[in-house]
Image 1: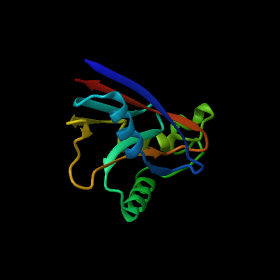
Image 2: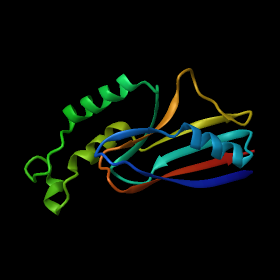
Image 3: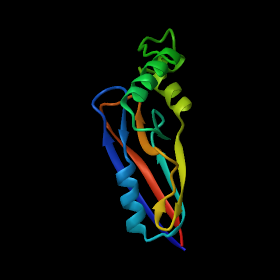
Image 4: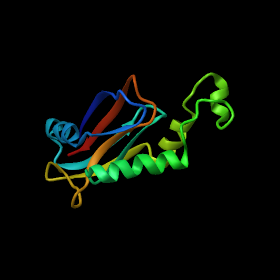
Amino acid sequence: MKSLTQHLTLNIPQRMGFVNITREVEKAVAESGVQEGLCLVNAMHITASVFINDDEPGLHEDYKRWLEELAPFDPSPDRYRHNRTGEDNGDAHHKRQIMGREVVIAITKGKLDFGPWEQVFYGEFDGRRAKRVLVKIVGE
């Protein structure tokens, strides 16, 4: 069995943003030499996400608006008890929970086995500092 572990580092200047990381994941799959297997991609921070969807700017703006309605940014300790610890990112933890931590993608014939329009995204909900994404590939 073959395996490869890589870490991507992203630094989003805004509190919330999405970055298409499909090309970086595809590059790791090619580098691994795995022809048949699985690729795990996960955010290694509790205020960030990895998800699969369409690379369409309107959809991404809809996500931002929807997430802000569900868990609005509020740095005060009144809305989010987490902010009583001195943090101001209680909303970011909720947004990550909604969008998910990770994706697992099948590798078939040495390529990510996507459906139409599927792409891999990093979602940031408490940006302005470097954060890591794990890419773990296993297979034959």
